[in-house]
Image (cartoon, rainbow, N blue to C red):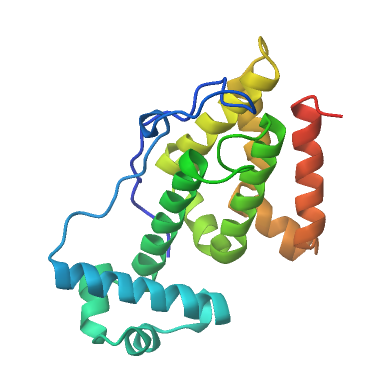
Length: 225
């Protein structure tokens, strides 16, 4: 199930002034992950039906407990359609993760605060951390395999570039003159999939405890009381 391909993304996020009183910025400033290639209308509809069925079944039972047959039946398409569009279950889950990450970028750019523009930097960074924990909760096993597929795989992904760019700008707004790019990497480091799995499965840290600890780190780094 290793995630072999490198997802694209090279836009920039909001400028460092995107805090409580700063104007909202346009969509060209945050790395935008590559969207699926154009499809015929029927193929596009089938793709969305399959992804919606997979999202629901994975959410109810977990990725490892759902088969392609069950997803195809729930989507109302043939099993061959799923294999043709996504290759296998790993490819389907990867497409679902890509969609989730693009949706998260859209919420960062245009969504409501605190994740979207209009909140203080520490609140926005805390909201980003919470959103990434949500992704890890749902797709941690796949993301762990992907990040372990080769050296540097996590950091070469378009999604990581987007989160790092966004975190860098929030830190620069809160701490002008400090080394925001390095601090952003350090804030995102605990959200590596292998680390997340170790904490939650090996050490038994529940999600609420983890979220609280991560928010405490965010507040300390961004100099909030």
